[in-house]
Image (cartoon, rainbow, N blue to C red; front, side):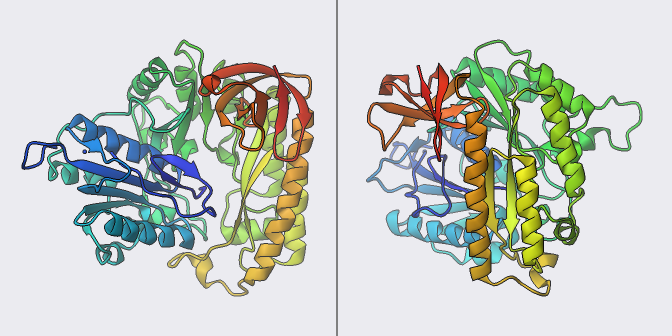
Length: 454
């Protein structure tokens, strides 16, 4: 799971400076409107869940606090996937207490679940939600009784995330998430379809299908239940693909083990599904994968990618890699480098290993020194840029469909966005075109993006 933090539901680099919290607010004792401020850290699922809370507050008479206005109620959705997530969660809660004197802060999310006692000690905190299924009862105590079944828009974004599934039942030795989001819970497909239709009708041209373990969508509905037809992830995106309009759908992630022939052929057939997938490698060394307790080995992983390439033209792959897992030798790191070369990833999210208390890997012997982890991250980052440029070159002279997300800061008169393959693209244009889907053509592969022409 990728760590990111946001203000007003906008993802930012977790290594960037601290985000300034933004805001969303029932009548107060004087008949006015109470104000509220929401801050999110973490994954796409957290982003979605905060947006759902925001819309619930708005439907019950809340409004966002202005930039210089103190908020009556603050909501922080926390992350605990790394130590950095814990640290940033605490820092933001303290900042909200300083910037909003007398505010009451409601804290939810994975860090709140993992260490509620520590969260309760932070200034301004009046409620800690350790299980998000209890959120309706918690909000009801704040006068919020009308909870929407799904979202209608996505604050500050050109694309919308839709949560289809929650929970993880795997036991990777480095991961805390199965402890804070246990079990599997899939949303009904008709509810998801209604939500996607609503977002498309409201102008969102890219919908990201997200979950804690997306590939396990529908598993618990048919497991050990005879006579019930399975309805899995590929059934879901076939159903969503029937929604008309000029929009596209993207999967946030998928495990290589969950890619079978049904999945591949459904992905190839769907008009709206983007030909870009995110199978998390985590390590390219079989011995490290065994210590991680991952369910595949590199040969099987690479085979799945090649099977998809044979059916889906120019399919793009991104991935996650953990560097410096306990005991990782120079030889094992070299194996990861080679596996990434063979996989030909277009993008890699690279993380130095972060030991999480109460996970097996935190107590493994031979912890890799921080300076070694840093060096290896840098080496893998160099390879990532080489592989990205190599992929961009395949699209020179090829038609692109770019979702324009903003102005290009370094190049006046140019816009930046992403295409169907999730390539970062810059192209000439005007600010009025931000938020639109633009047809263009690949022109020049550069280190950080593909330059396009109209």
